[in-house]
Length: 451
View 1 (cartoon, rainbow, N blue to C red):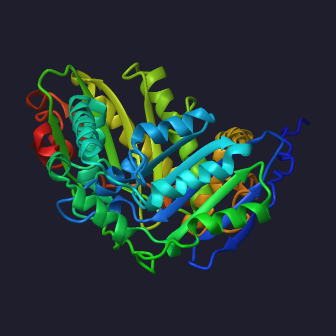
View 2 (view 1 turned 180 degrees about the vertical axis):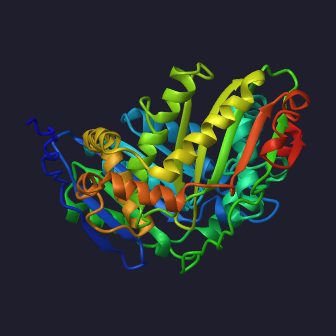
């Protein structure tokens, strides 16, 4: 009698991270110092809670707009002066905002770290916001916004975000809106800088060829006098779920012969107890090139070149998204297949073979995500920002490997959508609207409505 052959459990080599030392300056700025060799390079990331979620009404995009201008003139030095000093030593420095944070990043050879940290302190603490640079940034941002309105994929993402979040702060476009960018003034940027940034809410990550005590002294000299700003992290309001739940939104692009599709629903926060079961489940559903969605949509039916599903997990809430595109004539088949695959996964979950295959893929890929100093700094910053367990990075692969097919099935049953979902399409509304009425009330918007 033959016995069924079972695969041996995955044997993972320990993922050893360099020591991570945490220190705090007198003004409340927290340092995260990670000595890491052997290359003479360093990555620095200063992360402050205060991203686009808290952009005030009528000033959408102010956090990102201001952050991108930090190094475009500071402490009386022009943008060209700063760029020349940075480029001369082979460094890179920049600022940006995401939904929840403002970030200033630096990478440089270790022998130039002290001088570059001084420059980093200058652009963070003393930005000049020159009028000429504001106007240049305004033109570039408006051009980027216009490009997004001309791009069906980007247009779909913007329409989907609005249909999902509604008036919730997570619906604020990080880049901003046309009206807010057009009216952004230097006074708005100065006010943002003075009232939203704070050492108490800041974390400075330094990873690479460093001496911990020396960098602590350097950081204290450069950033120790930084004061002001909020003392407590702002809270993200609760979210009641998709604003347009059960509805179909069509963004009218009459010239399009294809239709972009986005199907969205509520997801989970970062660090949710079902984080790892959902990761394994989603990898099977639509998180890779061998996923069920790819097999059913591309391989079997030739409806599209691509299809995917993903969870976006933030500190206050999260979303789940299925995306693809197809010819206008086949939009119903695409939607039906996508909804059917989600329903199958919600009902039964992945098979053991599917789950094990994706666990090997995820655990095998993870170490490559920590190869650079920048990646390590980003991973540690995520642990801090989202309040994740201290062993989140070192135990990541073990947590993935511990997920069973049953765990993934239970998570799918709890978190994948049924009828509480939003469908967003971008294409010829006249042709699409009659086809998709079966999926819910249909409304048509113009690209200009999303400016």
